[in-house]
Structure formats: structure tokens, C-alpha cells
Amino acid sequence: MAAQRDYYQLLGVAESATTDEIKKAFRRLAKQYHPDRNPNNPQAAERFKEINEAHDVLSDPEKRKKYDTLRRYGAFAGAGNASARGRRESTTGRGGADSGDLDMSDFGGLGDLFSSIFGRRGADREAEPEEVETSVTIPFRVAALGGSVPITLAMPEVCPTCGGTGAAKGATINTCPECKGRGTVSFGQGGFAVNRPCPVCRGRGTVPSQRCPTCQGSGEVRVEKRITVEVPAGVEDGARLRLKNQGPKGQGDLIVVIHVAPDRFFRREGLDVIGVVPINLAQALLGSRIKVKTLDGKRVVLRIPPGTQHGQKFRIAGHGIERNGRHGDMYVEAHVTLPERLSAEEQEALRSFAEKTGMKY
Ligand SMILES: [Zn+2]
Ligand SMILES: [Zn+2]
Image (cartoon, rainbow, N blue to C red):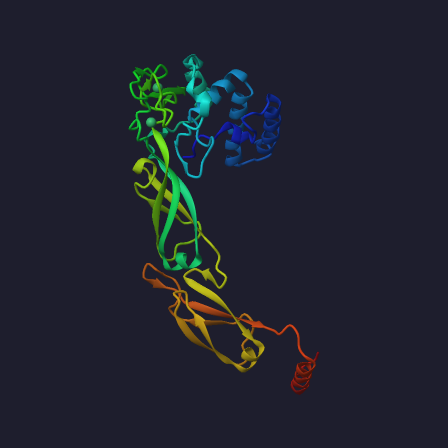
């Protein structure tokens, strides 16, 4: 499922790292994730494999050069991510001046490189729908009661200049020299042949003689898109909402990860909400009637009995979160606040109170 990791990110080194720096980073990580030190830990084993792979390619100048070229062409996920992250999302088009002069002869051994990089992976990711993930932080009340949340994010759209072909006006369209027009490159070992979209033509099977100046050949541009997310009542922190066909080019899905901001007054336990209300010493000792606001802004009068303790909770039935026909309650948690300073007269009054009640001080 996971997208192909970026080798530089895997080793935690910069793109400009020297062979020495790469070796050092590799040794440190290899030690950390070595199977001998992580027995029965498949995650560490997988990581160890990946680190080895990354080192294998990046420590060999020839392989590294090819890898860098492919990487610049967006063949690997994770390289140069923007605000929106997506599977198979192209990072092409932001390469700047040097992305224009790709020497196709560089790709002579592409198949070899691919099998050396991906040989151990079995899954064909081509069938996976393209999707983009983003996250949004919403206020506690919106999460509890539900509501519309507008978000703006940069989304890949079909390039308006070339209509998605990636070709400049008047350019001739040639068969892609890498995939010979198939649009996929296949690689594999031991009977497992796996197809990937061709990184040179991006699966089109053709390359233009001149690239579209707007999208630099990628066929897509990033557009600031405003999307309204309908948040269901009772949504929890970390929830993932799937917005069908709101993803790249209006086809893939947009996944919105919800983060719920803490509230000054309310917190949540399941479907119940707990609101903290400060009461003073006299209210706690003698009892009182206090006005509290519920989650949806209604005012409710709550009777505080004499002798209320700090932290004591009072239930207001049915004013919690409603979800799937179930209703939570609201609880008011009384926090007793004490005066910070007493005048001489007040101290005297309190002393006499303490003496009357046998309270030692
Ligand atoms: Zn274009
Ligand atoms: Zn191709």
C-alpha cells in the first residue's frame, strides 16, 4: 500500500549529500534497524531492506545519477511534497531550468535500474485510484455539532494550455523511446513481471518534441481550490473523511484528516461533553444557582447544592453529542476558586468561622 519511499528521505540525507555522508547515514540506520537488534519485528526488517536498497542505489554514482533523473521526473513518491500529498502524484513541472534537457540516452539501463530498485516489490499500483490527503483543524464545537468547514488547497488540475497532453502548440508527438509507446515499463525477477507507468512519458506512450510552457510537460497545473467539507456531528480527532471525486483533476478522492482543536470550556468523553464552571467558596459551601451554556449555546440554570466539592460533576441530561441516533449528556464540573488575598477583616471573619467549626489551621 505504501508509496515508494524516497531514498534521500529514507536515509535522512540531503539531495546534495556526499557519498561519505550517505555511507555514514546508512551505517547509523542499518545498525538501528538490523534484524539482530530487532528480532520478530517485521517493520524493522522492512525498514532494514529499504535502507539497504537506498544505500545500494545512492552509493553507486551511476545508479544515483539515473535515480536522480527519474526522481526529478516524479517517478517516486515523496520527493518534494507540497501541501497536498498524494499517491502517484507527479512532482514534475517544478524542476526549473534543468528539467528541459533530458538526455534520453541516460535511460538505456532503466529497466535494470528499475528491477534493482523495485525487484522485491510485487504489487502493481497502477490500478489504485489517485487520491490526495490533506488535514484541517476544526473547533471543538464544530466537531461536536457538525458543520461546514471551508478549506483551500493546491490541487492538480488538467493544464488549460495543452489540455493535459503536455505538448507545446505545434510540437510533434513522438513515440516514447523508453517504453516504445506502451506507456508502461515492466520489470521483475523470478517470474514476477510488474508493470509501472513509464516515468519518461508518464504513461502516455508518447513524448512531445517541445513541452507545454505552462505545465512543463506534466499535463497538469496546481490550482488553489476552495472546497467545503461537511463535518458530521460527533466527528473524532484523527477521523478521515473521504470526499468522492474532489481529488486531483476532479476524478480521484480527497481525504480530509480532521484534527479537533481543544476548547477552553468543553472536553469530550465519548458522546458526553464536560464543561468546567468556576464557583466561589460561598457558592460551594452554601449552594447556589448558576447559569451554564450548553454546547449548542442554550442557557441552562443549574442548582449547585451546599457542600459541593471541587471537581464534582453535575449532569444535564441530553445535552451531549448526538450521533447515529444516540445522545450523550453534558456534565458540569465545578471548580472551586479561592480568593488569593484576604483583608485583615476578612481574615478575622474566617478565623472565627474556623474556630466555630473546629477547623484547624
Ligand atoms: Zn500544459
Ligand atoms: Zn514512455
